[in-house]
Length: 369
Image 1 (cartoon, rainbow, N blue to C red):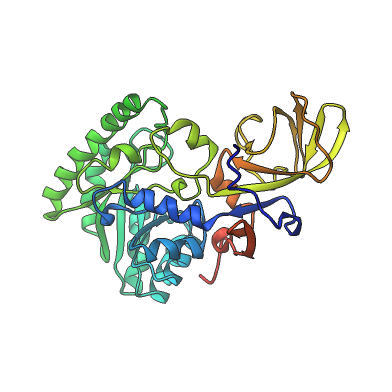
Image 2: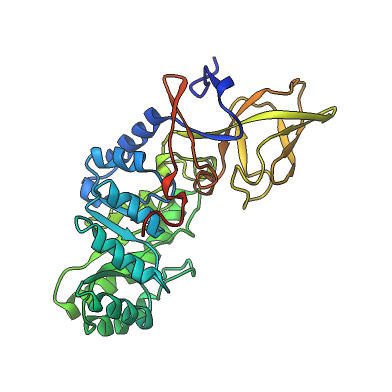
């Protein structure tokens, strides 16, 4: 019998396309995460996936106190909800340093930190915070193979030495994101992750001897969480676990999270025999991947995507199923994080019905700071 957990009884009241969230399944995903690690203090989940005050509150209520985020707006949402410890996992270049300072002044109950990977940025942060007689907490952003941001561990010692002499700036630890490691084979993923992490261990020992104190290490994201969670003392930062998506469901087979956010779309046209068009355009679902890796329908038949534009997605019907205009399809996004950012007011489903709508508050680039 088909598992119909996703069916919405009052779906006729829900306009499409829209993101729908199932809070009961969100709570189950939080429980799965909590049960996957030896101590809750080693969790520092990233909120870039959900961008939500409501979901942040769910995690805080379960005892999670440390968080990671990508934008000043996300950091502010966490502060509004009372998160004690927030890492801006981004190097604050340009006006962001001043915004981070303003945020720390507005929310003194939250300890903010950020990433740094070069001396010029470190000096600017030091200058900005010194003028306000505030101390800036920073983590050294390490490039462990992704080649997106960071300084290689081998070159980080001199940077740490220079930062140790800057006013009102305190090096809290090391940040190593290895999001490029996504092998389905867990043994291969573990091997690559361990190899990338070895220089981090060596750097930690050298830096602690240099500074005369212990440093925090924050490592990985969702793909390598299964590896880093086994390292004593290392803080882990999964994010996608909260809603899950088809991409990680296919790759990370050892992680058993539930789909907790879907896109509801409707058939809007039958342009020719064997072809349907739905209202799930680029503006409603993440479209950075190949055409066949954007959405999977839980209640669809043998559909092959053949076209995608701003407001429309076109499918070839490869079975005998007959579709009608107005028919509702429930889709699992291949990549949930940017999909969430496309929906300001997701519909919230309790007990099979949409009961309310949330505001994806940190979808905005600025809230008040």
